[in-house]
Image (cartoon, rainbow, N blue to C red; front, side, top):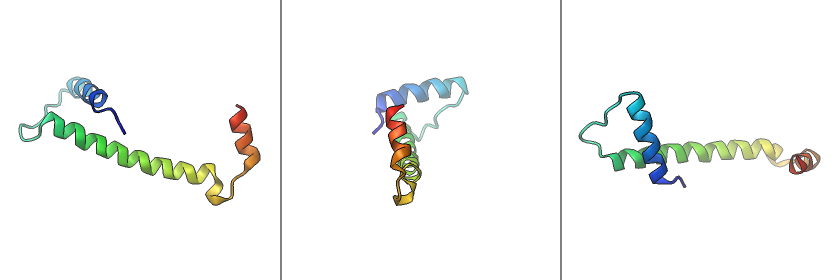
Length: 71
C-alpha cells in the first residue's frame, strides 16, 4: 500500500511542474486516493505478470533462481 502523504507530495510537485490545476469539484484527498488506487491496481497486475515469468508459468528453473539468489 502506498504512503498517501508521499503520493500527495509527489502529485503536488508534478502538477505544479506541469501547471495543472485540480478542478474545484475534486478535492486533493480524492485525487490522491484515486491515483493511489490506480497505481496499486497496476502494481498488482505487474506483480502477477512478473511472478509468472519468474516461476516459468508453474515450472520454475531452480538453477536460474539459485543464480539470482546468489547475485
